Image (cartoon, rainbow, N blue to C red; front, side, top):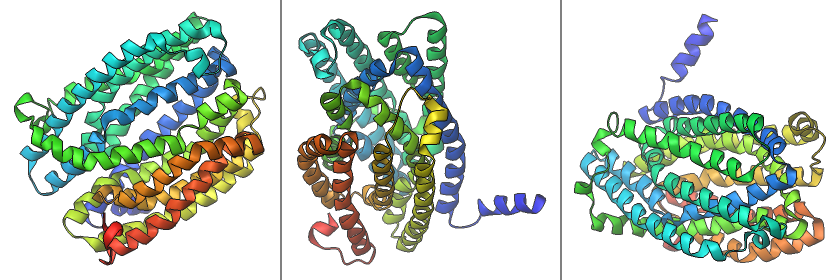
Length: 452
């Protein structure tokens, strides 16, 4: 027992300083993510029980629409992530603080504009038609959308503390904030099930306000303690730095928009083709297989900023070794995903009961998507970290143009699984392009579009 403990301890102390930091963050993130996954799994049947499968589908669709607006940071978040990591790697901490302060200032302007625009247009939006629901729900959905949007805007700004922490190679701490937000939501929804009948507005407040409360207290604490040297200040706001963030962030913004249309429109398409109730079985499968995505993402997350630092310091050998290990991990994850697919119906029954049936075709398409997306993440993580995303962007934009009509066509042809099948086919584009680009970059043979 002692020898095993000693081996594990030495494992997390051996290797390059960058690798040791990554391994410790991965271990801590696994513990936090494990708790977050447990809460996520508990929330699904609890929420369905509180409202019903049809209204749950409505909530999923509306919240995903509002979630799209997170990309209206015009790439500032990812721009900050890279610029902050580069500044810290060079020991330029005042410059890092300037990037943080400028990002907060620029996002404040964007959020103010978003709030004004939404307050003006929301009264004219027919949410019942957008979500394919009975017309008598229009007033309730309009209020729900307004509440969710306001809290979303607050979270939009406050979550920059998690970006700073992740850029500083401390993703475990930022993951802990997400866990606290989910735990608070769970507690509030549990209380709602005991004190009220199913109410979409109450549900929206529970899910939307909890993360905001956590981020407010977290930001106040860390910017007055551990991250005081990076605390945002009007004194450090420089519009010229905003231009630097925009130059890098604009490409991330376009990539994010393409990603939304490529990966996040399925709820809307399913609701329109088959009704909002059918969004529920699709999301049951999505949340089940997203366990794999979350675990893989937990392991990979520390590497984004680590790649930025390594590339800045020209440590190519470390990058190659890390990618090799991540590919071995992907193989293991693929085996786990196949096992989850084989026993999926059994676990669906244990998890949400027999009232909701998830067709095997949806599970197969979802498992395939998870495996392919995991492979792409190995390479896109490195490319994002060093800001070489033009080729990735072009592939995603092509997919964005084709995705919606192809999803509708396959959906009518094959049902709900066909909607996801279109995404799987388009995902294969980057499976071919990204490994080639990464190999060219690491071997110093990248030219033209391969080096942008």
